[in-house]
Image (cartoon, rainbow, N blue to C red; front, side, top):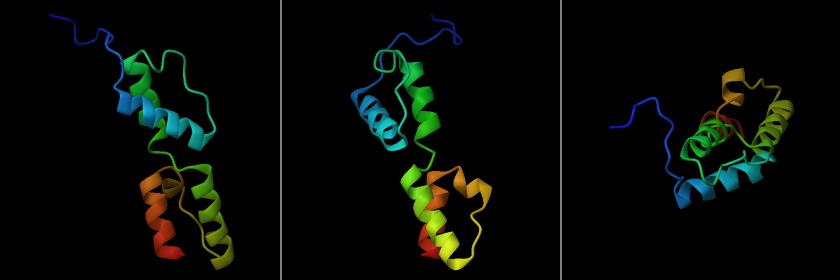
Length: 91
């Protein structure tokens, strides 16, 4: 039986790769080396970038905040779902 701490040897799924490519494009970042062949590298990238709001969403929220004299809470700036909810509540 493999050690639980041993790095996974399997490749990421096609859906993971597609989601990662979309997130990289949305955030304007390069995919890490071994992204398409190493499950753990792919998962780590997805964990980081799927929860971050896109620059476009942040820009839109900042325009709303400026126009309405509001402040976007720091924790909202860090999470795409929370930022989306903030935008919906304040547009």
